[in-house]
Image 1: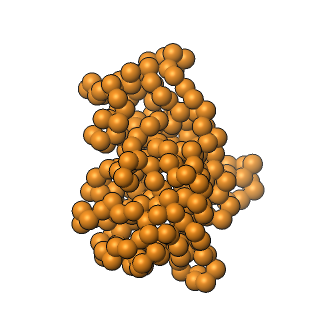
Image 2 (image 1 turned 120 degrees about the vertical axis):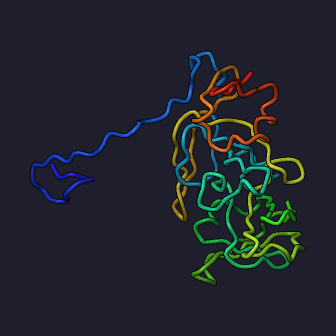
Image 3 (image 1 turned 90 degrees about the vertical axis):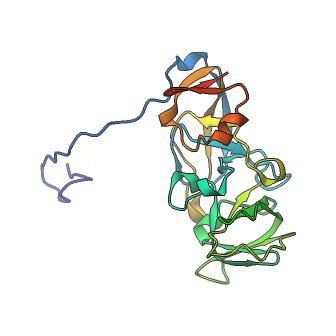
Length: 235
């Protein structure tokens, strides 16, 4: 059998690699006693690991009700290229009135009818963009042009590391709702199809270090929950 990770050839072979830590455990308590729900996750966010904090797409149309990765409330926690930015689409050109420009792959995180918010790293946002009326992925090969209803800010620039995300909390301030309890793949780009998954709601003890984007603000959103050493207690 040919090896997929070693020498590429159709000859018998064995490839040895250093041992890793393996998959992190999520539950400290027994999973069977936790409150678990089945949910649909919006397409375009790629591979999401168990333990990822999730929010609800609160748009009145578009992907209404779908889950999306939680966007940290503080812009300082949204660092491009890290887990803190898995729920956002970085802008690749400066926004103008009613137009936001993101990569073509990232544009598939959104659908017409979604309500967008935007922010950047200078503390100006969050800024309401309004409902998406069109997503143009054909005029340019470099970016997608997302047309929204009510974007007036001129401060959403590439230099300020501006980004867009779907409406997932009051006045654009994201709110954490659930935690993924398994790895899923929502797809990337034009072939993204979303995912069906189960999520943790309450009544369990999780390993805090296995959680992704569990910011101080997210902990507050999980009403009655608390951190106790290396554990996150969901009540």
